[in-house]
Image (tube, rainbow, N blue to C red):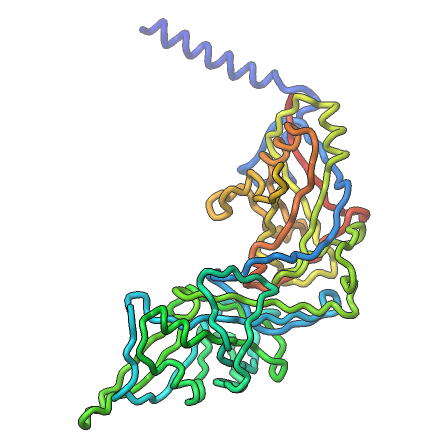
Length: 419
């Protein structure tokens, strides 16, 4: 037994010594300045420049039934004007199959509440938003997909709210007391399905009569709702009560985004070359495509057996970009069937922390780790292109300007490999 243990220790020491002498002069530790101290890899470091990149419209953004949305107006010289409008059903509580809300019940008030997530451009400022609430003239449907370009007609004879509302930096819920003309909309006897069809839904928007700004709304919060306050008047009984109707979570809803690019570099152009700048805009605005095909094929010819240990796409931010940055950039690849899906490194952005995709202030760039993706490109021998989009583009207004391919600090793919 002692001889066996002694032999195993000798073998372990030999293996360790072999590891020290196996490195060649061309190998180096990537990461002292490139990656986190917990993500260091030994190997050969290489860099590929982007062959081609451009900015294009994001023209098919699904917006129905997400947990967060955004309403408001904003404009700047680069991206032009954008408005966002909310369409939502009014629903009964999830445990209610019907409602009997007439007869001896007398309405006191109805309050529409939206739960604030953030405000753009500065969440620490106070705003005065002019809200307008009208009823839809046709029902918002449960079985229909709605996109950024979708809209529904409203009943112009209805105007349930039309006034300024102060939104302070510390406010978490925005409340609007609706006009009494709204009371008949919800005072009815109906099943849950009948109620949604009969009430049709609401269009909620912020008009140009108040401050410019974008209000992000948390639809998943229980405080995004419609509350009716009433009292019972049967035989002198004046008991007060409250009924909470659903909006957002538990009902169908969507947001419409309206862009006006008049007078901007995007006016009349679907594809904008990315030699100087690349633009990522939320709310169904602009997305970016990058391609490494020529550089990747040259590398593959020289190193056909390369194994990628770590790869990251570096996206330097342009100096004129806003201080408020988007939370994350997502990367998608084109599959053989023509569809686009998240790259392999981005299976689940909420658990796969190695993907990154966030802004790094120390180098003024966004970084996307794509080790599996690059290995897959080498395996298939070509790069069909990578699509870049903003993660929170349905509910946050932060936009992004990146350096283009011809500037000194340009987008690049940095990786470590062995062969």
